[in-house]
Every structure is written in C-alpha cells, then in structure tokens.
Image 1 (cartoon, rainbow, N blue to C red):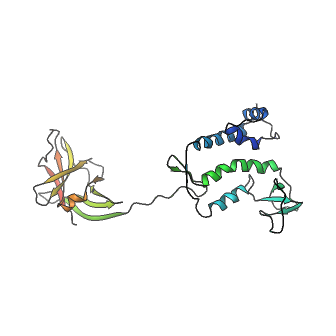
Image 2 (image 1 turned 135 degrees about the vertical axis):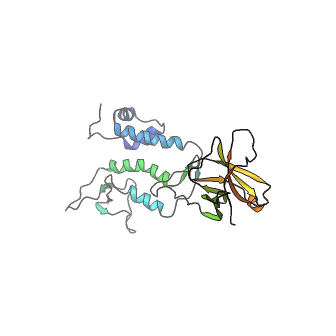
Image 3 (image 1 turned 45 degrees about the vertical axis):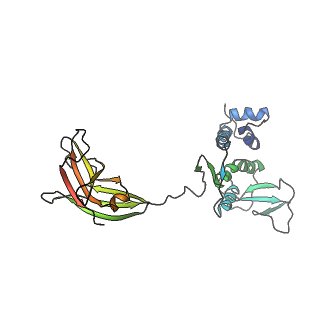
Length: 275
C-alpha cells in the first residue's frame, strides 16, 4: 500500500516517534504505510541510538554554524526561502525596527524561479526540513561518538602526511664482485626509525633471506627481519640505539631452515650506511 502524493505527512511527530515518545495512533499507522516517513524515522532512530551513550562535545569550527543556518534556510530544491510577516515578505532576518509576532512567525515560502509573482509553499514544508535539520546541526557541532568525530558540510578531517628524513644510505654489493644488488637507507618517519631495503628478486636457495645490522667492529650483529624475495622496497623497524652503538653495516644472507638463529655466513650483499 502506498501513500498518495497529496497526503499530509506528520513531519512534526517523526522525531517523537523515532525516539520512542507517544504519538497519535494515526501517526504510527501513517509511518507503517509511507516509505518516505519510514525512511526518515529510521534515520532519526539511528542517530538517536548513537547519542544515547555519553559524548564529548568539541567546539564547531568558525563559520560552520553559518553554513548550517544557510542549509536549513533553503527549500528542498536548494533555493533560499522567504518569510511573510504581517503581509510583507522579508528575506531571512526581520529588520531591527520590526517586531515579529510570537511563533509561528508566518508562512514560509521558497524563493521562486524568475517570475512576476511568487507562490507561497505550505508551512509544513518548512517544518519538515527543520525537524530533520537537527541531525545536520548535531553532526556539525562535532559530536564525538566512540572516539570518532562526526563531521558534516566541511568533509573529512585531512590527515597529515608523514615526513620522512633519510639519515644515511648505502648501495648493497656482492662481497666478491661488488655487483650492485640493491640499496638500503635509515629513514626517520614520524619519530620512528626504519631500515628501508630495496632489492630485485634475490635467490633464497632452499631457505630464506634475512636482513642483518652488523656492528662496525665486525664481531656483533642483530637480525632485523626476513626479506620477502621479489617485493622490491621493504621496511624494517630498528632502534636508534643500534645506530649509536655502531650497527651500520647492512647485510642480506641466505639462511636455512635448521633452527640455528646465528648468521649462516652466506652473505649475498652488504653495504655500510653513510651517516
């Protein structure tokens, strides 16, 4: 069953219905048979459920409320509205020397397309926009639900791009022929130090490839991770203390599945970070 286009929608009661407040029986019956009103009730109910939990309010950005007011003061086709007060049409606010009557102030009419005369729209059209408009106002106020800021009109909050600073880099050469097989660099990103290793597809043999940082005394080394062959640039988290202690030689080795954590001695490529 569908609702005729000329039927009056109970716009003023939809918020009450969505939030569980008592409404006349004919309002409930109308919502059950009217797709438009049912959709509005569902949207209102979803926001109402979100706002049941305690929330933290953050101040709205400057000028945002002006955008909200401008949005509410437009009809469904995006045109500005006019208000009739005491038989006179005023655009937006009433002049300072005019005293508006008690609410409702008058009949709200959409600004017509260019024409000699303007036709006035029913007041219920305005009431329906204001009833749903509180959703826009709540979102624009910056209500934080579950740690996520709800934003409207201004779009999503831009995320800053992490700044990367290269502390040192080196070519990775074979130990015997000095053939270049890649490059490595120590990079600081957002306060974290990483080792970037960029290589072509290296042959792991029957085992796997491991990345090491060797101390410049050539007696101590630490493993920083497993290199996935054929994936180009890969990043490994390291600590500044390693660099400070002299672990500046980057080494890639072939390792076997033999449960032996120490270096196999089979280095494919190596290079010293120039810091």
